[in-house]
Length: 311
Length: 274
Image (cartoon, rainbow over all chains, first blue to last red):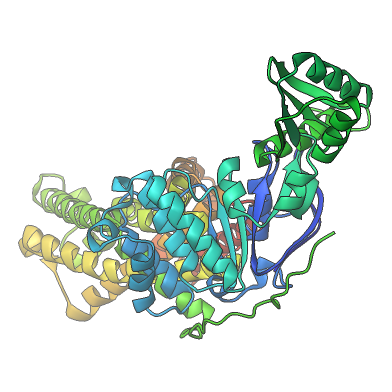
């Protein structure tokens, strides 16, 4: 369980995280979304006690990170910077981490095995690790203490398709075991396949905190596709929909794509107007579309006179 | 706003082993592991050994030359080899203190500081653990360097040297203590300043430049002020002086500087974002 209460971080006059209050609960994968500079990494760093909040609190299982005596048993984290010394081997890196928290040395071999790093890769110095190997090593470090809470910042960065699938399965398994998994990614398609719930930030503010399915369903980007053999009838249907406030986003000889309405409404209207219809398909928005809608609003809001953010 | 999950918090099927050590012992063990798993530690020790051997040989040659030239006014006579060892520290310390310096600056340079602070979030605990490891390693290295210095100085001095066992061992132990405290001083300053170059510059100023400048004019007040600086205090301790204060006070002054640097470093670590 991660609890953020009025969490705020200012760097000089710039506000990176603005009065963020949200709970990230166990048993599900929570996607952490936002454009670059939205404050995702800063929030994660405050949860991990690396950055000091300007105001508010970030708690892990009810306690501030800096008060944890054996934090690796409580929280595992992968930060975007892999953070390994160029001449230290991955194995020594993990061994030092394990020792700091009283974790037996055999657990190092276990997590190396778990993330698929063999003996040769684990003995390579940090500078010889590829981005993908670095990510796997970072995830090994996150799992070292078998923690109930995991924070993964862009975990699929640098991974090949196999690695991406592996992360997807791993995060699912971890969440199904009842752990709290917070996952940031700029790959919306990836998030759509992984997250159960999403927390969206824009300019440091909370924009959305909802189950993924709900967010996508509510998106204005959801649309309806209509196809039929009568161009004139389709044009009339399009005009009628536009009059009702829907938007025709595509129109060609054999079909229309409409947003801002529902498939049932389009079907009813077609019946009313006597237009023959061969296909009527509701198209769900992608997370990416839903996300762009949400963050576009936040940019407009923040840039307006009420935004109060100055540079 | 938030939908509660059906899974109760922290209900997990896996059972994790309880920590086998306390957090401070763990932090010390981690620092020890980190120190010996990078190559720079070994290079630093090798460089320190070579610097000590070369400096001790050079000082011994100077002493022999001064005894055998025509000017009896600067004739140092028969010297204890321990004097050559302690004299060689003036240069060798700058190599040894790199161990304290790197323990922090390399973490900031490579980003491993974030891993370190995630493993040991208490800033005081992590810095104290580093101080213990740096002090132990620089003390043991100091004993080794003292042995090397005595082994080199003895044969070079020849008839102009003497090596009473107790006196030489005392000088070697004092050298090791001096290096350990200077190592911790470097560690504390590095934690406060973060960068290697800046920290080294400040160390040069504290150990050499400022006290030398204060002593230069020969004005009593300024000389007394210089006596309070860590390098000068350490030298009074190494030389076994009784003036301007007893040798033990010199040791305490140096230890005070090291403790103050650690306190400053802890303050900076706690305040600053990592």
